[in-house]
Length: 274
Image 1: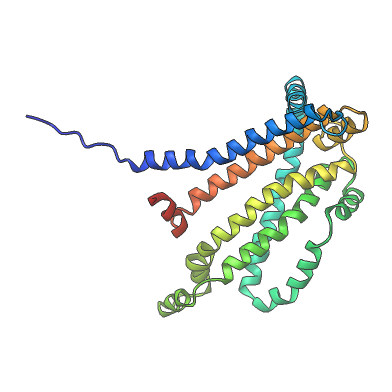
Image 2: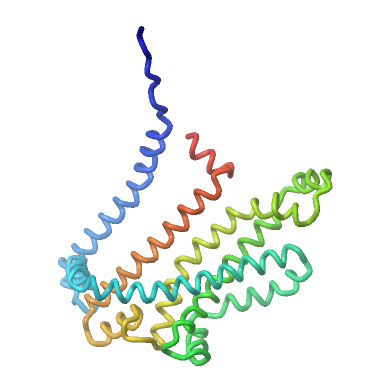
């Protein structure tokens, strides 16, 4: 008796191939950018204090990888704490404003005005309130930066539901809680994750800038500031590379959670079926 083995579906291999093709342009731009950077510095004899060579930065990064990792982990903990605090408050306030639109209309102009304040204005105030060496002072700065994009994007998702969906739920005698749980909150997820991804980058920026105004020696922002002040420019750039790697990794984690949580979304299904 002859048995036939059904071939494996090719959709998974196609998705993998498409993902590789999507990454290739970014990799090519990165490689060409680094090569151009190296060539410009060497060709024009640019001094190290202006712009070090990528090879020198990479060597300094490798030689100080343990110290950089320790400093980066300390700063990342501050960024993560402020991220959780700011994003959590942003989602809660968005839900509150969506429940009572007049309240949101009254407070939204002040939220926009507060969002326009530069981060360097918040940093000294938070350090005075909580202390230079207190990690919560940096978390508070990060929370302020993360709060607004998450709140605004989540509120937009909660309030941009198609009227037919609301009418359908009301025809089933659904209450406000059911309407939020089954329609508004699922509809807000893509918008909310957009704000969450923006906040990952802002969290690292806020933590490092807050450390520029004072912090422990083992903080990444303080290390970058001290290295640049003492003329260790390659080490300062190595610290910047560590901050960038942590920010990219943080963004990638939130993006992976988004893909897992929004598989039902039409855009996600479209990319899966291509």
